[in-house]
Image 1 (tube, rainbow, N blue to C red):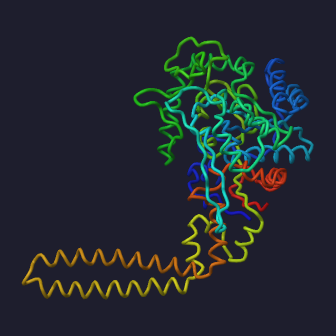
Image 2 (cartoon, rainbow, N blue to C red):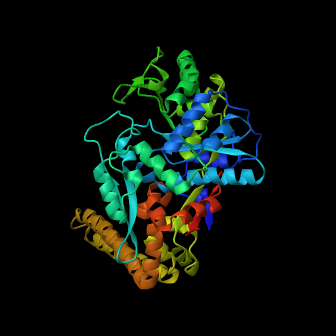
Length: 499
């Protein structure tokens, strides 16, 4: 069951045009069947460090890494911030996109390496330490419960190496009624917790890459040096590209600092705080250099040399903004593909859509509007009757004002105010009647409310806000297997997958 991305609420306009074939800004789109790249120009130390870190997280990826390091494999990469308990559903949809491409490629005889980049250098603690979990209520619908742990002060400290707050773990375990797993053990960091959960849920077909792995940062030193050397050229190129995007009707994803340039790099102090590099100057050791949202894709592309990058709408739009920098800094640019968009629900819930002939996009109108639309005759009669009554009463009040005007000039204004009040209350009364009509069929009301609360909770599309851990605890390997089987990466559709 699927619907066009154009009907997915809040979809990026640039991405919609790009998926429709607009290649104005050089973001190349493609699936997977392209030539296999030569061996990436990296040291053996990086391959060893990748194998060691994956082994610590429970992934036996050594053979996959050695095969990649020798060259001759098609390389695909995606990534995400290391959010608590795996983050929202779209994180798992990205991984499923990678594994679907890898599976399909290798079925055609194309050896493929899938990397998942762990954005451990982000410093948005509040975002990383927040998760929303659906909870079944007695009336049948789901309520979205948000757990969060916030810093008491603004912090520039990178999140990946911070300890997951114990209070957040306790709340999650209680809400999901689960035993404490090793990936939520006391004192574990956001990086290790996220990585070990992925290893547990997905297994060894994907290679995890810590963005702050020292060996990876050392491989990126030539890129950091080039950014410093071409600093002013980079700023000008970004200004020109932003102007071109605006002229074409798009909003650049990333803006420069007020009255200053674009953020390109940071340096990490001894406590893991990110200090802005605001001008070209000698940098600290590469292990202390941290990238911005604009330069992170450049580091990834410089070190891993992927053939295909799979990203969400915002990440695709990043590439439209930074495409000139690849040529400027002589970094090979991968093809860019959109992550699969997928929502999940129990099969019994999806049968509601078939039973009441509900189109997927109708869900995003909300439960009340959807239910009202199922009773067109009654709703139309309510609106027609209210309109007639509203006009009739307004006409009579206006006539009263006209008759009394010679005696009291202020009465005309009072009549106008009265008409406004009456129209407002008529509208509210009609809305209430429409809702009552929708509730008349309690079984239908309950089923539709549950459907909307699962796929569009609190007026947010499920995959953006709901933590996939809730569904994984219920469906386990079936969730991952179904996603890999059903997702359609780099396609202009969103799928609703039954579990």
